[in-house]
Image 1 (cartoon, rainbow, N blue to C red):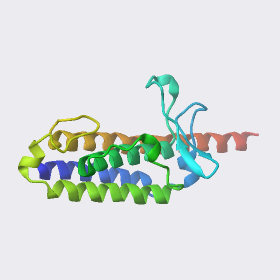
Image 2 (image 1 turned 180 degrees about the vertical axis):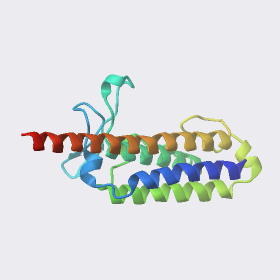
Image 3 (image 1 turned 180 degrees about the horizontal axis):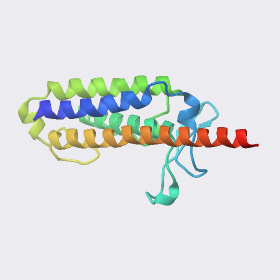
Image 4 (image 1 turned 135 degrees about the horizontal axis):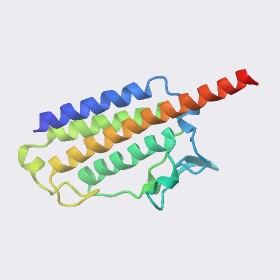
Length: 178
């Protein structure tokens, strides 16, 4: 089952890489609505919005926020599983650019894959290493959740790119008409 999980993650990884190809900072920071989740620069650091609700009225997140969210949950899963420590979301910072975020997400991917490969069957069936986002489930369950969450986030990056391209095309058309 470990091999199937890794193959499934690889498919999600390919989608993520596809959607990040030639992704620019301006596009990643763009948010299609005024109230969508965003990464915001405050003095010398970046902070991520945190929704108080998951209602549709909060609007779609920026691609940058989605990338930060990947760093948040994947980094937290790795740290909790390997080091028995659960960092606070405020400890996870936006690295400042798409290139840096992709690099950090690649690191999460590589560390996670190596970690999964290092586990034997008993460890994968055990709940001992699974501490976040749910405690006591098997590592198989956690690995399947990681795949699902990553595929969802990769699709959100793609959806953000489609929205940006459509908004940009509409703005260009309006310029032609005026």
